[in-house]
Structure formats: structure tokens, C-alpha cells
Image 1 (cartoon, rainbow, N blue to C red):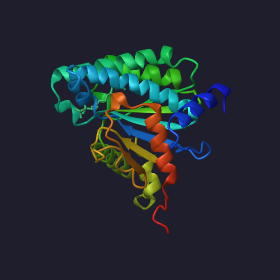
Image 2 (image 1 turned 45 degrees about the vertical axis):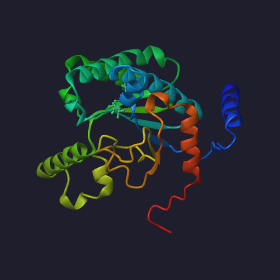
Image 3 (image 1 turned 135 degrees about the vertical axis):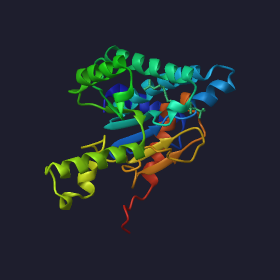
Length: 255
Ligand code: FPP
């Protein structure tokens, strides 16, 4: 562990003495439902879009922190298949933030060895955003540190529908046989193909549901909820979630 990181973590653990982390047993894959941006903003008399901007800053901070402590994969829910129902102004603001985030990624994350990937149906996004997604993914794909998966126009059910259609097409074309279909094969038709399922799913803001996030992949994920709104979420909250996760007894259906 780097000298600076050691002191940074030590500082956090001493400030909140009840947080104990075993850095050799970190969750490999953490997923976050970045909820509460709107309520955070409203509470302060700000427009909801200010909450999303603050949420994007939190994302940057938490991404860097996950990379520093050695988490391998971070998957965040940025825009769901249902979020199109929001007022056009809010949808536009979220899309602008996303574009800025992707454009800035190269500069902001420079030297940080973070790879960025977008999961979801991006075919309905603007041409500009689609091109930027491909550019950012290509620019960062050989980075071997943290993989940041940003879920955009993502829905767990839509992902399953998409996988079923592709599997049916491949059966029709003779690429695979019906008897080849098993859990592993289905996982390989998901957006998260090749990635470990999330060990820990975090949802701030007080809501206690998955809201169509990683439905297939969350079968044995540990869930962690908090009342804190996403813009106020700090590395300390993340460490608390990891610490609680490390107290859990994961049995995966066994005893
Ligand atoms: C849920 O909070 C959050 C979203 C729908 C958007 C999440 C987006 C960001 C954190 C920033 C943009 C992302 C990137 C990748 C730059 P909410 O609006 O539902 O909050 P509420 O439940 O309090 O209304």
C-alpha cells in the first residue's frame, strides 16, 4: 500500500474509530445506485440539476477513492430506462453532465489508470454522446486499475430482454444449441460479460429497493443502504459500507 494512502486511510479510521477494514478482503466489485441528488438540492433551495452536478462530483471522488484502495470494479447507475419520464430539462441536464464527464475523463483521471465503460442501450443517445462514449472507452481501455462501468439508459429487465433476443438469434443461426444455454452462457450475453457479479450494492438516500439495477447480477450481492443523499456521500461512508460488508457471512445458498 502506498505511503500516502496508508496515512490517508489511517486518518479516516482514527477519526471514526468504529470503522475497521481488512484491505486484503475488499469487495472486488462494488455497485452504487447514486440516489438522492434531487432531494439534496431541494433541501437547499437549489434546482434538481444542481443536485446532479454535485452528484457527478461525488462520483469522481468515490471513483478515485475506490481506485486508491484497490477496488477492481465500480458500477454506477447514472440513468435508467425509466429516467426518460423526467422533465425534458432534467433529462437534458443529465445528458450534458454525462457528456462533460466523459470529455473530462481523460484529463481528470489522467495517470490514475482508470478504465471507463458504459453499459446500457446507448443506441438512442445523441450521436455526439455515442461518439464520446466510444472515444473515452478506447482511450482508457488498456488502463489496468479500477474499471468504472457507467450504466446509462440501463434497465435490468431490458438487459435480460436484450440477452434473450441475442441468444435466440444465435440459436437460430446455429451458433449455439439450446442445450448450451446455462447460467454462465446467459451471463456472457449481459452488458457485464466477463465481469464478476457485484459483491456489494450500495444505495444511499433512504430508499430500500434495487429499482431495476443489475437484476441478473445481484443474485448473491450484499446490499447496503444509508439515509445519506448521494451528493453528501464521502469515502468515509464507503469505508463504513465495506466494513459492514466484511462482517457479513456470505453463504451463496450453502450453510
Ligand atoms: C437519482 O437521484 C440520480 C439520478 C437519476 C442520476 C444520477 C446522476 C449523477 C450522479 C450525475 C451524472 C452522472 C454522470 C456519470 C456524470 P434522483 O434525481 O432520483 O434524486 P431524488 O430521488 O432525491 O429525486
